[in-house]
Image (cartoon, rainbow, N blue to C red; front, side, top):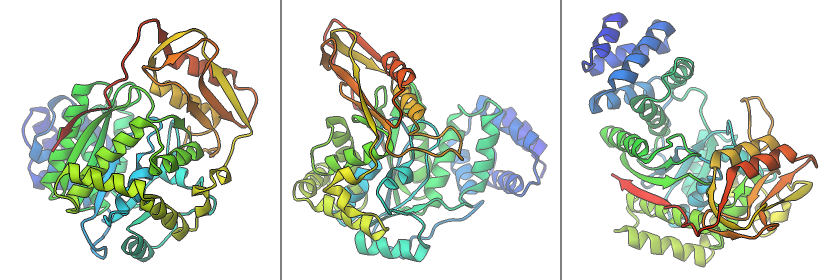
Length: 433
């Protein structure tokens, strides 16, 4: 078998067999197939696409290129949730304890952030003492005991995907649905969950800017998940404006705590209940989405979700008293109001610009080596559809430096205010299964 023949076959729009895909991924992982040939293959896929079978086989080959996490020691159906990313996306911090409170095991493998704000681990490390450096045996024990634990990503998880992603980034082949879908799903499948709920974002703050592309990606990922025997469903949700009000690590932890109390922003609350309902039904704990939703609302009301969060934090070295005393979280030295320049209705908040504003303050990483400031970020005060008076705060900047003119300009550039009343955007567009 020769790589040049596989490139030619895909260039001509023919379907590759499982054996051919396995040969290619194994050879590339072992440095037997050079970057220039894999670049040619990626470009052929970019133009010719892949069949459903090819996508499943490519994903499985990448899963088998490295470590696969064995969660068989955890009792029950393990359900994972993955978001394609956005600004102010605090859902994991809410969903894990919320679903765990109903006895659904949430064994979460998470990474650090690169870009707008920190990742799930960065956010959790806003809690003094919290750490994810635990052994696999400890991880499994904690999930069995508390129904929730978070561990850092294995260094050798899907090495083929890491290599291929780095190559796609510099060969203009990132925007390929088959390659995006197999990249995301290979990591989720290698992480060992029995079932997967996907939150595919669409809008200016998302990877998929328009709804049709988001639907195509969601369909591809659901087909891959189900094709390798993992029960997979997807929700397509809005990321045309930031989710919730908080953008920044400690600020998002506080917002997650409020949401677990039932006092969080309406959009974050609703999205967590929708995603959580799917997780609970996939785990076999409820017969319908309506029943699952009622169960989730009950553990919010009776405080069980909050107690599960406290237990989770304490079990991984965190100071659980931050739940009742959020002032113990890292706090910025300055809170600076961003006043509206005109009266009207907020018609648009460019999520990406708000994310960049938070990163300028130090809430995100420009490179993997960058340090982040857990205390800083942006708190929105007005969302799309809200009325605002001239001089009223549209947002608050949490900063450890007084000079925030550039950040303020970035926030102003994100907000559009018009005279006519505007409706809030649709939060959840559709579900795919």
